[in-house]
Structure formats: structure tokens, C-alpha cells
Image 1: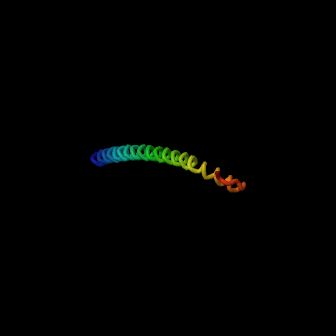
Image 2: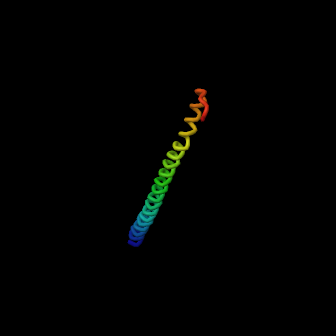
Image 3: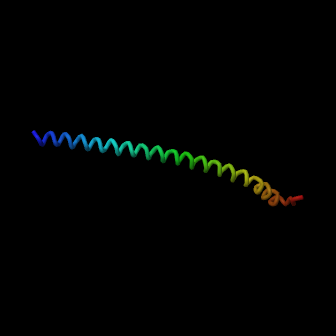
Length: 71
């Protein structure tokens, strides 16, 4: 009778450990998702800044390509 009870106890402990590990994984996944979201926002801001910075350069390149000199 001792071995079946020991097997049940060890099984319960194993499931408890797996539950704790699953909770830790969930916490890390949420943390990673927040970091990915923040990185995505930063990339979007950088893209907008780059587009704003490139607009005058593109206009100047178009003028040069058409032979118009700046005033």
C-alpha cells in the first residue's frame, strides 16, 4: 500500500511543479509581448521620422533631375 500512495504523491508533486513552470512561462510571454509592442511603436515612430526627413531630400532630388536650380 505504501508504493501506490507514494506514486500518487509523486504524481501530484510533478503536476504541481508543471503548474508553477507554466505560470512562469505565462509571465515571461506577457513580458515579451509588452516588449514587442513597445519595439513596434518605436519602429513606427522612427519610420514616420524618416519619412518626414526624406520629403525635402526627395523634393530636392526631383528639382535636380529636372534641371531646376534652387533659388
